[in-house]
Length: 250
Ligand code: URA
Image (tube, rainbow, N blue to C red; front, side, top):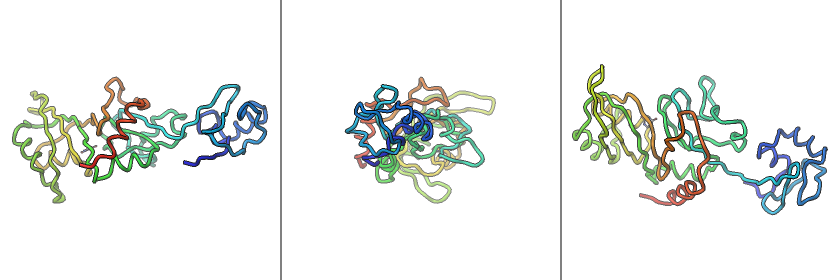
């Protein structure tokens, strides 16, 4: 991120209007820099060292955004798609200004925790195969899941393309009889992120994932008070925990 920037860019990034609206506001004398009215909307400023105000109110500059989304079904974990709605379409316009993007992918029909940020370095490190960041999923699986699958997942299973998964931890939460037969609610923690990994791991042991929800990623836990489709900013503590976690290699 640049240290210095145009004042109109800063104000529009902070959600105070489009560039042309800001230009008008500058002409109307609504913008000040260190208490002096700004005359040129293209003025280059240092947003950290200098104090910008809009209609008399201090504009606090920031250049990073961290959002926790409870992803609903039916939306794509991407910034653009020419067919489907994306997770970015769920954001309020002002939350898109800093160009957040999803950290990794959840399938269209998977729900749950998705981090959106414009912090490319953090995203890269959370996704790096070398870092082995834990991801925990809760799933409803068709079939009686038990010790056989626990043992298989601990050892690693061979996926349809021949890849053998790293040790994963399987917890059985509940089993119940459904019209289609016995179904198991499980929690699975994996340390890698192959395409459709959870579904393919169950395919490998002859079971089918019916619903899938991500509940954690590294130290970040899904805030269960967020309804599907809602999001909030990470707290300062959550951001710190993620930053501390990313340095670890397992
Ligand atoms: N594993 C899957 O199969 N799907 C996801 O969306 C995430 C992990």
